[in-house]
Image (cartoon, rainbow, N blue to C red):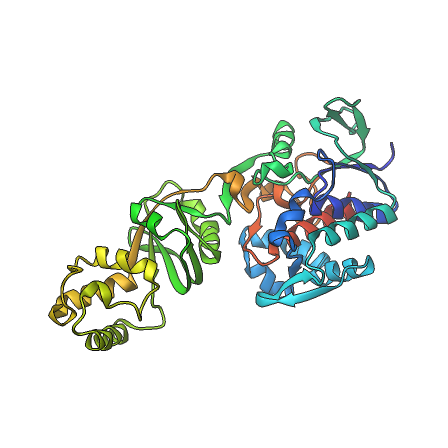
Length: 408
């Protein structure tokens, strides 16, 4: 059993860990509960697979939301350039798109998975599919016993857990690894959804379902304390709000879950209050003989106009030339501060990534080995680290997978 390594989980972190250990000449067995590898990776980037990000390492680290300092060794040991070079070796050419996002030229996530499978095969990693691990125990002689559903127990000198989080459970991410780690004495930081849409209390939001607004500013507050602010694209849904800036916001406000969170949208962030009022004045002069309800077509998409009118408390049948200065200033304030009340996140199984997991205080950041159980390693989403969208979370998977495979 000398240096026989088990990797539990066949996602990007597990594949990288297994292949790296195999490259070093170790006997490696990769166990995956699904009938194929990389099932969650297959749906990333809407099926195109945002492989990583082309930014400098320091830029990538800046996009880590939780425990970024823990990842320095990992990111510098196996960089974004390293994964691009590795994939090229196995036939996948890449391209850089908006936001330095790197995708396969083919736009097929399956090509990325196939390349990693080739890497595993080249390094003589034994792959066991449909292998559901049910238990993990550390024995008196220092070895590990892995129990399976419907298979015989197996024994290994070292184990790497790379089972992912609890988001998208249909891909196999059902939190098994947390239970294994907890049974061995590890602390699990609270599991919360990250990169997930938000539910909103106000009923008028449902009337805007399907409306996408570009170049708006969104801010989140607890009382008067601002906890988030960003610009970008927002999408209204039947339950609340989604879109890139909302997903980003969710990763920052999830640690305040349970507080009374207010969300403010600035619909015209490029205009100061004064310039917006001048713009509205020009429109009112242009449509001076029209009713208020027919005066905002140049300023907003049609779908949101009835909501703006309703929330402004200005009579929709009022002639534009009769609107008072006070009413006009109130309209400006509404446009710059459209307020909503955060109700909840969507269910965690809809989250792109899981926040929380194995405490980074209990893992050696230079090796990914447990500080509690020698010979036990972790890689990927199971660790309490997560990042924004843009290829950063997959880079966490490769880099931590590489370190665990190299040091096991």
